[in-house]
Amino acid sequence: MRAQAAPYDRAVSKLLEVVRNPVAYIAARWTPTQRTVQRATLTALVLSVIIIVSGGAVRLTGSGLGCDTWPKCSDDSLTATSEMGFHGAVEFGNRMMTWVLSAGVGWAIIVVRAAKPARPELSRLAWSQFWLVMANGVIGGITVLTKLNPYTVAGHFLLATALLTVTALTWLRAREGDAPPRPLVGKAIKQLVYVLAVVSALLITVGTVVTGSGKHAGDSSDVPRMPVDWKTVAQVHADLAWVVVALTLALWFVLRAVDAPVGPKRRTRDLFIILMCQGAIGYVQYFTDVPELLVAAHLLGSTAVWIGVLRVLLSLRERGLPQTEVPGAGETEASIPAPVQDSEKHEKQDAAPQAEQTQQDAPSPAPSR
Image (cartoon, rainbow, N blue to C red; front, side, top):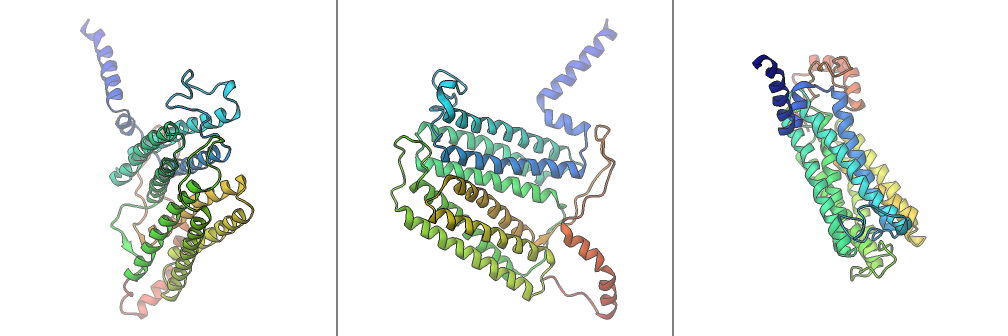
């Protein structure tokens, strides 16, 4: 009897192990490749962009109160019904996107946790995404319960931007190793980039005031607005945008003047191109009475600007390449070296023979700037 009970006891023990900590259970039996880690973290980032844009679509279609309560869609129904029409479908669809986002974040958490060697810092970033999704769901519910109060709407967007920040940082960190950061530029350039990041964050924050005081309140009913002049705030927003452009240009010229590594220069160039596109959309929407489609494009552009700023920030140092282990049996890909980060790595490899010749002529390499 004892021999017959042994398989049952093992099965129960395994089930309890899964229930207690399913993430640890998977991590102990599966090792993802570096490519899988990068794709999982990128998926969470893309979904965080989509949830911001879909939230904007709710506001721009006037569907903010399509579901007039929370967490149910109405007092009588958990989901949208045909009687709620188009607006109910749009608002409920955005709520369902939160579950898709949660699945993407959950996948990123599992993959990062299962990576070998363990990466605790990256795992903490991944788990932060989960808590931000939960917090944003709560403030989204408060936004509906307060009938689209403009301040809670602004808080909802800023918390979504915080999620965008963490998903972007997780993706960028997944593409590099965990060695101590080695600076690629001097202190003055880092301070300039910090100022650029702060002004960019202020630009996004003022953008929420433009939204809270301007058109597209989110519903056809009498929705309260922020008691400020919309055109004045829009002008302040535009002025801040030009400051960000000027700082980006200044950074690019300084990087070229000091012959900085190609990585920071390329990230700065990319940010400048994004800013030019975003500025063009902003001015066109302002002079065409803010049509919904252009507002949506401008919202998408704001996510691209912020990701661009974060890429510039992290390009100021390098941490080597991720370490990899042979994948477990559940992984179909063979063990491969971590992919080289960005094309500048290839340029460094191509320049290696020249660097060796230079080292023979010079007593020692110059210190990092």
